[in-house]
Each structure stands twice: as structure tokens, then as C-alpha cells.
Length: 393
Image (cartoon, rainbow, N blue to C red; front, side, top):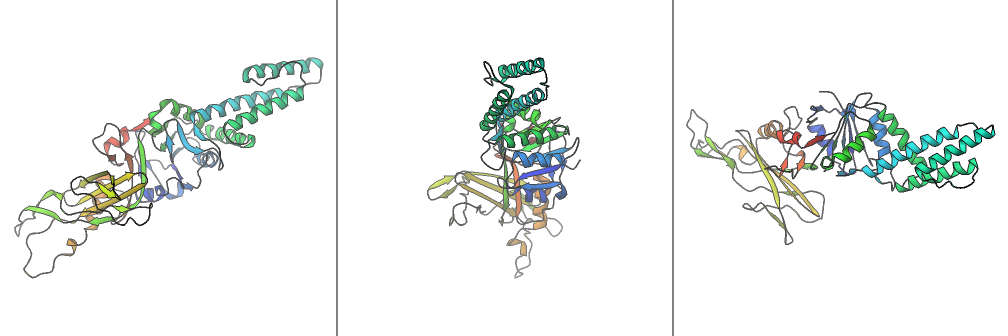
């Protein structure tokens, strides 16, 4: 696995850095990526300009992973830190048109104008460019007037992107430097971009990478969620002094979903044990939860999402309750708290990665949300269905 340049939108996805610090791997149909802190940068805000600066640091033929927001037609990353448009398919087309126009104008401006023939040839070149770009150079005109008319056109191109002409030139210069690197691959973990291969192809051309990959569903990076204790696994056959109890593969008890940043004063919420729904001030929030069992311990993860509320919660069952205990002896400590070493093993091996740094209690969560044609409400990176939802162009 090659180290990659990891670039994170710190304002839009503030928990992604912590997640990758705990689970420093990212699967991909193009090969799993190993992530290291020294090659990780968080940009607040993330803009196209500073993104291009960081992509250059990936080096010639390098690989980069960008964690940001997106939509089917492009990245929700503004060209600059102001009111510039997002880097959409349409924005890239405007940038490319501007690059071609500026390249032609630069050649024309460098043409000699010492003789009358030189001047006529130069005017004819401006006329030809005007016809191609609709510069509206008509009738009799001087060479300075033609050059100024091109500048007006270029300004209008920048205006279409809600940036200045100088910023447009910066974007063009920086993107050219990235294209010169011919990155081996550029991957995005961003919502829904993979649903539009046409837009992906345009963005691939903008970055000049050999492979451009993005998921065709929503992505999520959540804050470290609190893992609550639930009842021990219930034995269905008593243990003998020489055997361990056999246990059911469903934990008992009630688990809680805790509020993350959002409306104040909502407190701790408990889902309905049958429907899995949470009710807040009369509004039902449908629950999406899954259970992971490795034969010794359970980890139940629930995510509740509906605007403007977002809740996450987890629960873990300790090792199986032992039916054999001397009368009058105190209850084992694990009846009040999960066996964190077992919970960590579930998290690392079943739905995260065995090489992760998770050791129990709170842990960050990331995955694909509402994946299409899946039996699950969400998928986590260690599952085989995960990479099938990543599209490459």
C-alpha cells in the first residue's frame, strides 16, 4: 500500500481527520490506501486554489484522497475563499474555454507589428479569435482596441465563475501544474459524485490524473460516538464447570442514542425497542442501526438522521454471562461495563480494520449512507460491498 496525500475539508467534515487517525486505511477498487499523519492536511476552508497547492505535494505519479462535499455534477468546493462558484462540470468547461482563449490571445499579442503586413496579419488573427470566442470585434479597429476587447471577454468569463480575472488565472496556472504531475489516481470521498460519469470525466481532465474515483452514494464522517453498556449476552444453555455457556446471538437490554451538536436541551434519547424510532417533540426520527457480533461480544451502532437533527449512538454487550457463580459473591465488573478489549476487537476486525488504533469506548464512525441496492442502511469500509459503490473513470 502506497502512502497518499490526504486532503480534508476541515469546515465541512471536521471529524474526518480523527476518523483516519484511528483507522488509517481506506479501501478502493484501485487498491487499499494507507494513510499517515505526515501526509495529511486539513484545510479550513477548502478551496480549489489551496486544494491544487496540496495536490502538487503528492508528487509526480502520486496518489491523493480528498474528503469533501460533492453532488452529482461536481465538487462542492469553491474556486476561492470568497463567493466563487463550486468546481462543477460547467465551471471546468468555462475554465478550459478561458485557458484556450488566453493561450490564443497570448500568441497574437506576441506577433510583430513593425510593417503594415505585420499589422494586417495581427488584425486578421484577432478577427479569427473574435469569431471563435464571440469577442465582438467588428468593423475597423486598432490593435490596442482588439486587445482590450479580449480583456473584457476574459473578465466576463471570470464573472461567470464569480471570481476575479486574476483568480481565474491563478486557477489556470495551478491546475496546469497539477496536470503536469500526471497523478496515478485521485480519489474523492464525497457524496453522490459517482452517479455522474460524465461530470467525473470532466473533473478528471481538469486534474489530469490517470484515474479519478468517487462513490455513487452519500458519505458520512461522524463525531466519536458514545458506546453505552447493554445487558450481557443471555445464555441459552447453562455452563458446566468444564465448559463455557452457549449464548444467543442477540443482546438484551436497552441502548441509547446520544445527541451530537444540534438543538440544545434535547438530552439523551432512547429508541423504541421494537421500531427503533426516536421521538423528539412529537417528531419521529427513523433509526438506522446494525449489530456486529464476533462470537464473544456485540457492538450495536445506531444512526438517527433527519433535518435538523442528527443523533448517533452505540451499545456493546460484554462477554457472555456465566451462569455459575458462588452464592453471595459480588457480581462481576462486566455486568456494568462492556469488556472493552472485546468491543475493540469487534470494531477493528468486523467493520473497521484490524490495524486500527481503536481501543474501546468512544470511536469515530465513517461509511456510505443509504447505499443503493443494499440490504443495509449503511456500509462501513471493511465490508465487501463498500468498494463496489466506488466508481472509476
